[in-house]
Amino acid sequence: MTTSYDAIIIGTGQAGPPLAHRFAAVGMKVAVIERGRFGGTCVNTGCIPTKTMVASAYAANMARRAADFGITVSGSVNVDMKAVKARKDQISGNSNASVENGLRTLANCTVYQGHARFEAPHEVSVGDVRLTAEKIFLNVGGRAIVPEIPGLDAVKYLTNSSMMHVDFLPPHLVIIGGSYIGLEFGQMFRRFGSKVTILEAGPRLISREDQDVSDAIREIFLKEQIDVRLSTKCTRLAKEGDEIVLSIESAGAPTQIRGSHLLFAIGRRPNTGDLGLDKVGVVTDSRGYIQVDDQLRTNVPGIWALGDCNGRGAFTHTSYNDFEIVAANLLDNDPRRLSDRIQAYALYVDPPLGRAGMTDAEVRKSGRKALIGKRPMTQVARAMEKGEPHGFMKVVVDADTHEILGAAILGTGGDEAIHSVLDAMYAKAPYTVVQRAMHIHPTVSELIPTILGELKPLSPT
Image (cartoon, rainbow, N blue to C red):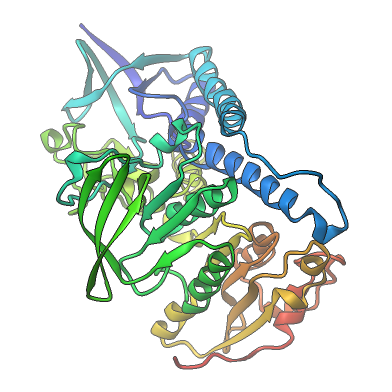
């Protein structure tokens, strides 16, 4: 038996549920398919649970620093990992339940639980059930990459997903991967009390960022006694007693490191390999990401791909923006496009990094004549008052058009202050609009106009 719908949505990450609500609101008959937990990565193993744990780690760090603020804390600061996990589970669980309940009680919407596969361009199977629709939307997300290292089958390892089950303190956490996920977990568990070693194959941390950002974050980590090893590759894994032994090559020299637990944080891959995309001819790239046009349409008419699986952004906000673009085009007669989007994101180490637009390196590569303004956080009153002077702020502008090209704020409140710059970029306003604005004191954002009043030519290297 086959059931017909106006739209089928596969996956309940950040794009799927709001799209279902929009379709249902205009009377469309919608089917939503979810094979795992409702809410996708953000709700269950990503943003919400990890940032809840980051908050606990921040609290532990501030408690240890109480004396810096004239506060006396008697005795040592103890972290109850079971309580940390319970708090995380409650906050994450509330979001998960909200997404699921919202879909199950939605008029004009039917929820199917199981694995979806294409049988034809407009037909999907979920077990023995067959569903058809003229419009099908893929929102299937991604998962952690686990590298093929000799000896992997002999050891237990963690990913960002299995880290959510940890309710104990790893004596020595070794992290392979020095980018966003690895850095967040590394600092978090160091503050909980673990010894932490981060192994990064490249010559610096978070290679997509500028050198000064990478260097500043490494310095922050070293001050927290996190062992950061660059240009280091793991060549073999072994289990000896309760320890995991990693054979590594660091700058070409072989050695070993021993740890109690191992976390892989080297990237993610899309969940597209078992959808039957080959049956219907949906094109993917060499890594499995579904290829889409400027309005999220695949090469097969009537099939769209949203969120992490399309490779056009790996964040909750990009996934939700995918929903907004699709809904605007299909329901609002508003031709929104992916190419109108400005890259923006945050790295939630402490202090956080807020990023918008182009890096310095990208500006140089573009050949633009550019200007840059930069200030250390030691010159930001708000940072000094809070006792958080690490990091810096910088903004790059086009010397000819005066439009802002990019910005990075590594410092307290950087994930919020960056929006002051981002909004001006969307407005395509000259930097002088922000420079002449009167910002509130004492804030982090108040220094942005000051920085823009001190622009100098961007160096060629």
